[in-house]
Length: 58
Image (cartoon, rainbow, N blue to C red; front, side):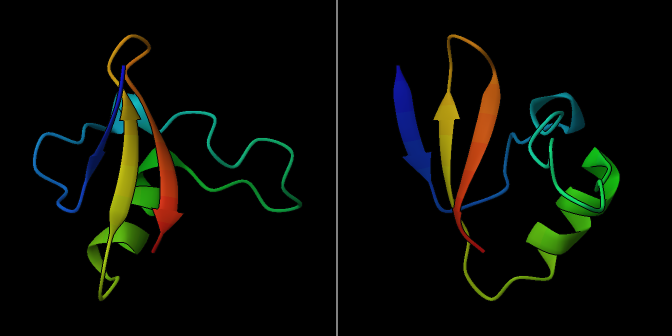
């Protein structure tokens, strides 16, 4: 099930693996989390079945 959240509460590093796969410059989960923390607004789609995150707007 997909749920949408506007907070980083409960977002773990292991949920951010593979998000930047195929990009010219790979971003680690740690860097990704820091980018999200530095954003003015965050909306994330969380697939609870897979424990992964899709960044809709950062």
